[in-house]
Length: 152
Image 1 (tube, rainbow, N blue to C red):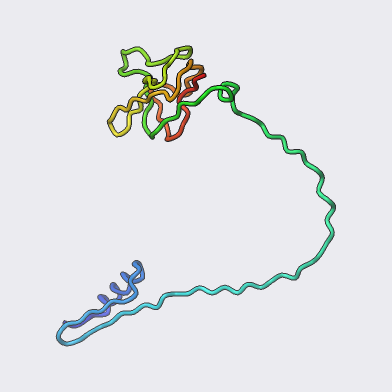
Image 2 (cartoon, rainbow, N blue to C red):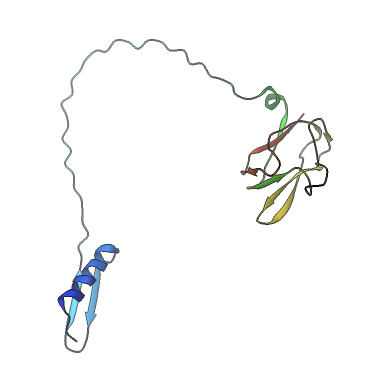
């Protein structure tokens, strides 16, 4: 077998496009070894001269923090999604909702369903109280840890 130049060029291109650093081909008559050195990039950093200047003292800026948390969230306990999925407030489209704003729930009571990977997961309340806000619309995707509702 005779290695032609075009064949060797294709092999070199293959090595450049991949992370191969060495390739060896042999037959009964000849042997070829292709090696590629790893390229190292060096950069020279030149330090700029340091110039000292006195800057005026910065003016005092009072930081005002806005509290975007609703008053409900400050007093109520959050029921959070334990998984990523789709929120449903009822067992089926024609069934009544598990809870509405104003509903009283007991600890362990089902408050909604999260569909994840074609499985319907009933979400239970970790505490008893009154539903004061439902934060998610029916059929809306939810993230892990997202607040679904608040219970006081």
